[in-house]
Length: 427
Ligand code: UD1
Image (cartoon, rainbow, N blue to C red):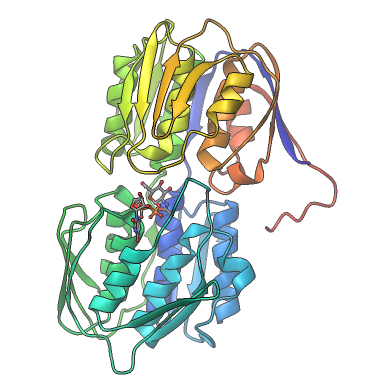
């Protein structure tokens, strides 16, 4: 089985460059389906979720040409089917964006019920509600989602019951080519929502208000081919390296990030005693002392991101005191705490709450990566733990972190990726 081996503890120092945002790119790639032509994208992260998205696009008829590892041209002028293959779409959550893009351009779409990290129930009722408000019929049967429209879609008013990143982006995608103005209320404000809107606007869409509670999409007849669009840097990858600096009492210059997006994480790291200095598109994080305990409640942006919850929990686990985390987005996001407990952490997690009593030392041992961000937390724990940590189920980590082992190695970590022979590198 593939694994990541870390010999700790270490003190990280140096520079790291953050890759493009996974959660923006997994939406922007399907969004290219709205264009009957070519899209040129830069700063696309080379991660397995993106490779899977590209496989799906190719299966629909897209032509994908790589200019470099992170730059590509997608030509969607010859889409031959709107039915995405089950074995590809069931694997990751963001495949739901195919629904919004395909129904907007072709009036019909079919995907399997999306998979992704196991964080508890992950309904798509708000996505369906948005499509229905625009006049689509949506059916969920035998593991597949079918969306179609008898006539053309028409503009409507959508008011979400819960703030959902995916449903907000899907509503934008679905409304982009629909005549009239669609008003979407109670929207998610995450940076990747804004990035998708910016990408579509760069090709002639008319989307106003992304990044606020209310988004208005005035449908255009067609989008035009874009010159080139660069995906924003990954907020969560940057946050993970910020915690890595703090947890190892290190000093890291984090390049290619947007300090404004990092504010909820910056504020909490400063509360824990880290020194955080912001520049235009870089952040320096250093820490000299053992962290002070902090309390966290995960919230939709601009609150503290749930996708940074396992990483910050690991920092609190070695703090000098007791901290608490309330998880308000996902119902089951503390499974990874059992792995930290194996390493010597003192954590009591029940439902959506975890009480974390800081310990002096964590000890390396074999641990599993339960999901993408939990996997990142296992690496952080391994960097600070005494002895050897072996992280298993690393395919979760590869879904969202480009070159994570090399990046940590360059910062001074003793870390290796050990691959099994015969592994399919493309999955
Ligand atoms: C996205 C991110 C994920 C992150 C999450 C919250 C992507 C690909 N993934 O996931 O990493 O953890 O945002 O920041 O961008 N909900 C419903 N009905 C719906 C949709 C969502 O009740 O139709 C609920 C969910 O159960 C959850 C909350 O809304 O409690 C937020 O989910 P949502 O923002 O939709 O998460 P995702 O878009 O799936």
